[in-house]
Amino acid sequence: MFEELQDRIAEKKALLLGVGNRQRGDDGVGSYLIKRLQKKVDVPLIDAGDVPENFISQIEASGANFVIIVDAADFGASPGDVALIELGDLKKIGASTHTVNLALLLKVIPKEKRPEALLVAVQPAKITGSELSEFVRESLDGLQSLFVRLFKN
Image (cartoon, rainbow, N blue to C red; front, side):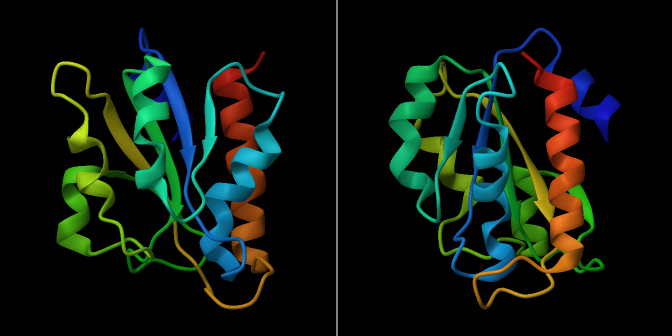
């Protein structure tokens, strides 16, 4: 996954967008990742919580031309599995655990300014309670290491 992401972001200005509600168990993985990466990476970070649509202007203002969205998504895998999913493929698998359609999220940005985007999806084990499952916590550790390698200060 490291090499694939590295190839995708080469020569691009990236931004990491964490999506998730920390009060819904594994759903908070994107939000937790952004918190963990503060002051450890040299790339804009946005913790969008469960309302990523409220951060469109920040994404646009960042000047990023590539957005990596990290979110829990049910893509039919084992708990804690991580997948790279093109936003256009989301409707095929119905992956998001949120009401907002991530595939449409960036389409409100004018086409000439619209960044490319890719979802780093983590298969949740549970979306209840306020604690991450052991499976997703392990994936979170791996994602933190991966993004520090990609975007270290």
